[in-house]
Image (cartoon, rainbow, N blue to C red):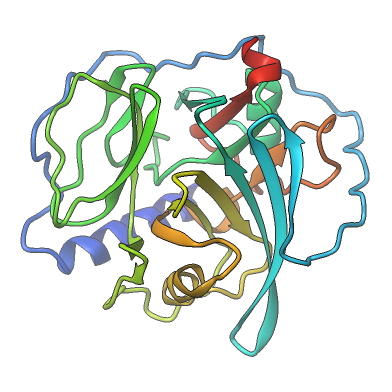
Length: 290
């Protein structure tokens, strides 16, 4: 699976680069550190204890409060003539903390990332290569790894606690020491509340994950539970959803890497990744941060 996973990421990179005016080389070289970093609040935990049975919840498009600043929605979509189910978390970063975790030497499933970090919830990050290294720029607690995409893709960033999403095609990355956390991935799905046109997905359907900003400035972290969606399908759904009210959205790694795991004390509903991943986006509410 690891070899097939790497081939998939490489193919997507080639596809995106072919649609741009420049190859995937750094626009500006960030500071590259020799060793990866992860900042868990407790040692990694690998356990064989059963996962709690998910509590039945209705896919009714309603927000449910899990913790201060964190809500969860289950909603339905339709793709390829079939119903699709989505799980989306909404986070208010004025009352919660977001951190990017990265450890290519010890990739983990999303369930084990959540246990290792002691986070309220985690979602997978962007694409990675056969050595589990991020293929784009990644910044974890101010430390930079990898190189920026150029001419394609997007970047979620946190500056002084404020989230942003930029389309690298129109707003290339420039070194900014104020960036505390960042993840690059591709493609951008929604920009200025409009679906991005001309997304190259070759009609391929898979599980998907995404990070987005809504009209109120909240961060949305979401996964699809079925392998029904093309990237174009997902972009159209997010742009049109009256429940999510998306302004900008970025695709994260898909397929077996996709997952969103919530602390079992908050919710009996989570979706683990099929494969271990080297990076994750973690959310800590006030109950964690004091």
